[in-house]
Image (cartoon, rainbow over all chains, first blue to last red; front, side):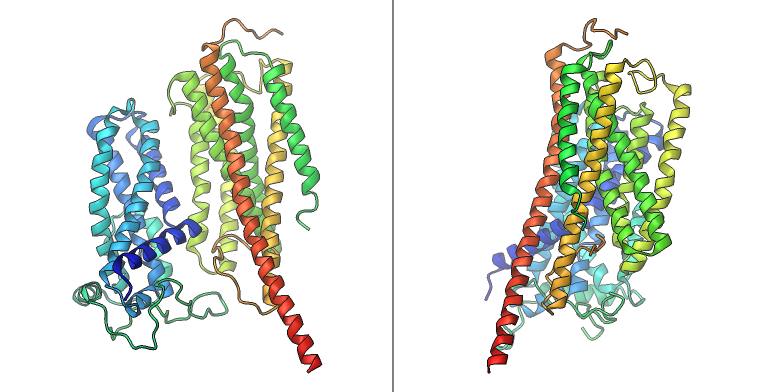
Length: 242
Length: 240
Length: 68
């Protein structure tokens, strides 16, 4: 049986490698953050910020940018059958959760590494307050990663619109979400939650001997139609009988 | 086929770059009020002009794509915008360094040219997530071309609006291309402009050649019925 | 036509750092681009090698079929 930490490392490595190759989450998050800073400059009609105003601008921007990353967290799993791969592999389901939390932590950390200096350059007159801020950011990232992954896993399973703040985040996220939703299923709050929790909490199911426990990644893509769109029932989707 | 003129073009670029750097550091006189700092002007402003012209070129290629429906123009447009965005990053960083040296702050919101360039840059930075959001390749190419055309039309408008507002807001604090510039500075500036233009063209051609090469490999694979390797980009247009 | 060298606004050694920084940023971006393109080139070469191997296999198979 694959030890949990190997599986954790494998899933985390796959996520980070795929993000490095496709660059779908991080640039959008960073771009959103910088654009929001520019909007705040013109909206508040100030060229420098301090105190609670600076703090408010920074946190609001970071949180909304984090929402973008959270939206896209499980998309690859749903589109390419990662959930099935996890279910087939003889590992503890919580490994997927932990790996996703770690991945989101890396994304948030990288985002803050890029956007906080830009915020300081744009608005702060002196960077003295940034030292303690780093510690706060680390703690926030941890909390945000854990709760964000939980919400994201439930949202991707229910195929309903995840709770999302109105505003610019919605525009970027909506274009994203619209292309993922194939069927408009009514959001049944109870069933998706139970389903997700069961997936996460189940121990490894006994597998048949002919199914080789193997890498979690590298699940085959479903056949693509002529228009390049995946077939109408993606392999990775949770079907109703789950 | 794309790589055909690449060697002479890159040699010309290197030669011009060497010439420009020598002119900047050995020939151009020192500015009266900014001194040595003003030398950043020779790298910052030509990069900015080239980036903006590159954005407009991306729009022109996009128009050609929409008219002819030939995907090759979409690839040209994508690569033109790509290289111009990279040049834009260089413009913003060198501009920040110049601002720090001249006025003591890394970023000045009061400088309209820099802020308007930032806005244009952010606009074109959304080109990629925009392309990524559309799955169907044909529609993606068409919509991206529409975006490139609209944004390309915005660039000169933005530039002119900033110029007209400047006379109302701030006098220009450093010597620029329009007047009061001695011949040596103008010559150096023009050489630098030509260098950046050549560099942009070389990089665009380089990128197109690389895309074409991987497109040919895919074509070979398909002809041999070999399995297609993974990692296809969802947004980069294929050139073949 | 003398734009002059009265006194540089910043002492020369300090100003030099900023100018050097700007030019270095330009060079670094250029070299990073070259590095990324070099990686792409490596990938193309690897794929071509694979495809060449497949083509040679096919050729051998066809020769065996003809001989057999």
